[in-house]
Image 1 (cartoon, rainbow, N blue to C red):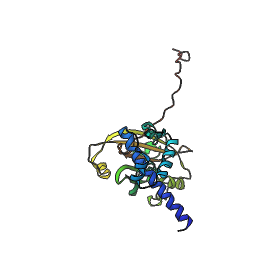
Image 2: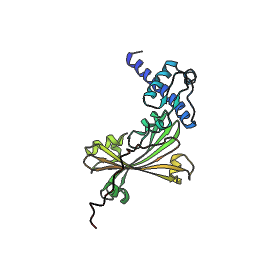
Image 3: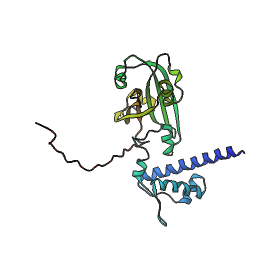
Image 4: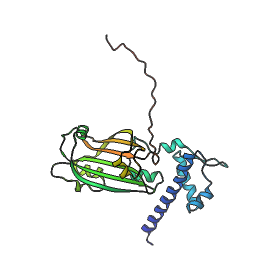
Length: 255
């Protein structure tokens, strides 16, 4: 086997062990229990004790687990929550793998369309302008975890078939600037019939939704997305900065 193939095989094995161990970490956080011992974890994952120890050392540096000599390894549930944050933008497939899931994505639809008045207002452009509609579905360990309905305005003379796999790469190519910010508005909805069919769940269950607007450095609104997330698969958190209380003064106001 060549050196490059050996390196690739080693990386795949490291990723496999990390993903498997993260499943145990996730389970312990949800149950409020300590993590199994290194020997048991190595046996159940099918790896060496050193591999388990190396992954735990990395997770300890991130604050996800706490280890003490002679004591069981504890999982910090708050640190687990902070591994998925609203203010961090990650491709969903990478996000799911980061949590230890086997992740894959399917493109269900890529079609040419026209901007609706509602989406055009959010993107500050003209209703009826040409756009591309892309529907994607992500799975975690074989179960549907997320749906995304993306709308990307198209410059004159371009079509949806030019987008490729990543809308971020396509936007940069089409408009000459990258998405610099995403304004994400979370909400909760009851799954409707049409969405439930794509989500492979029964209608009427609660889901997390995100309404996203992508903005470039120039201020141009580059895309709109409506996303549906299974809250049992991924739990998002947000970190807020606590500032000293401000003394309110009416001196600046003249009545």
